[in-house]
Image (cartoon, rainbow, N blue to C red; front, top):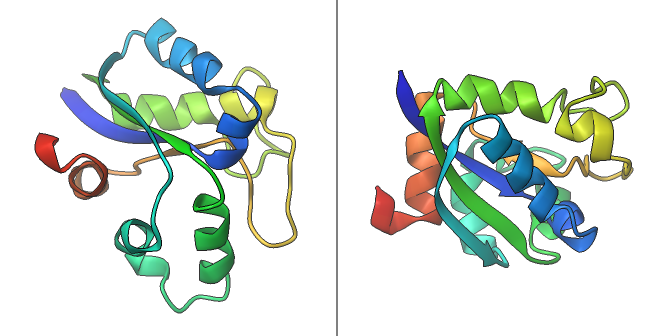
Length: 140
């Protein structure tokens, strides 16, 4: 089933110059890039994106990290792209992410405050629709 997902190359990935490599892997997997935009997320945008985490102990550190520099926001499309990109990204913890995945090959930073693991990918069709509407309102 063709679907869309939101992918973010987080500030750590952008700072290390890994945006092109992440995009290369997305396209090599056969997914289409529908929208791509470099932007520094505001606290307001991040509050919408991470609304389920508001009030949790890590929320402030997460917002601080995600607003610390530009992120590359991407809408990708393809057959089972949500599941496929999450597999391509690898485990959230870069220490145990499998070789061959984005995080397994490229993520190397572990902060005591928040995981810095290069990318974010929507976890369900519902999350993808909500996240795309937040980052790319014109596509919703």
